[in-house]
Image 1: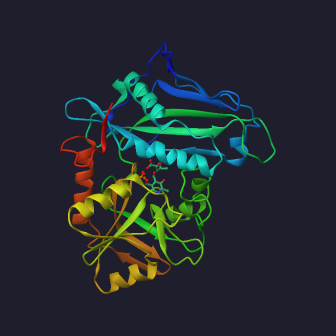
Image 2 (image 1 turned 180 degrees about the horizontal axis):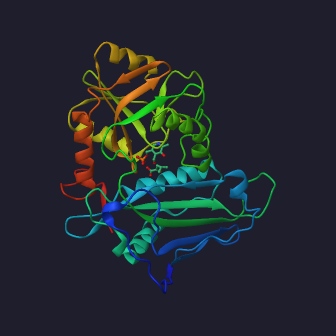
Image 3 (image 1 turned 90 degrees about the horizontal axis):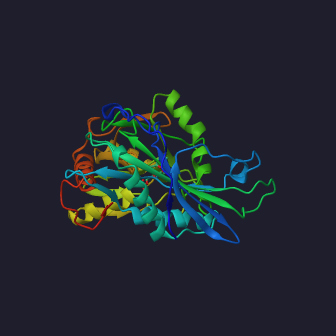
Length: 353
Ligand code: PLP
Ligand code: COI
């Protein structure tokens, strides 16, 4: 399949690279491709970024049959552009597709199309420290129909957004709050996919956390509400004694690509690394006994995000001394250096555009 390219007649003014937040500015072009039962995925095209025109009855608007991904394009020191493990994102997009009854995409083709889009938008990739071009591939159900079934037609699009830090805190510790009042996902559900409804389901608890002065929610398992799962937009790690622990992939946690990278780096540094169940009581007990050294989150948008304070019911703990811990710092630095190409990429994670 050939990607056709239609260039925008007028280009937007580029933003100030030193004032980028997250997800508010979009580039001049986007990628679009359609699916129908007769034609399969067809008509791949790069065209001006524009509103989607759809009927109010469009299925995704009613039943949330849609999936997305999040990755970043980084400008390296030589002025070139690179992606971090993009094949993993398209692989996960297909995992999400299968669970949401959406036809799979050709992962190799999708990566090729993304690289073409990035080539068109090269001037949008920022170079200020800590900035990147966030990539949001999305697939939505487009049948105009109100019955509940899988759609017969879909739109796959990719949009791009120049970004800085995800959290207003930057690389400073965030405060997170454990909730027992709400659950995000249960085993057998769709918690391990990037589908829209998971984020909708997290909003009320997130809102309550904000009102209480916390940045995000730390979710517990949906059955016993005992075991730690993940944070709203990142996976979670604990350093207890000399062990680096993250909850195992139980089926209700997103298998984060940054999570996997942290695990692999930790192992390569000779650390004791565990993917296992960890209860919130274990975390609090480890703090009480002085063994809880660090907590940090991992994600594409969040990179590595140290946690300085954790609230669970009436208990509030300060993690370490409330500042960035040495391991969070080391993971942050190493992952960023690989992503921006300032150190050698030991595992073939980086893909040139
Ligand atoms: N968990 C959730 C719910 C997320 O939205 C994300 C972000 O993509 C992550 C974890 C981290 O995943 P990744 O490292 O692949 O970005
Ligand atoms: C990401 O880290 O890419 C995410 O998708 C998290 C969030 C912005 C939804």
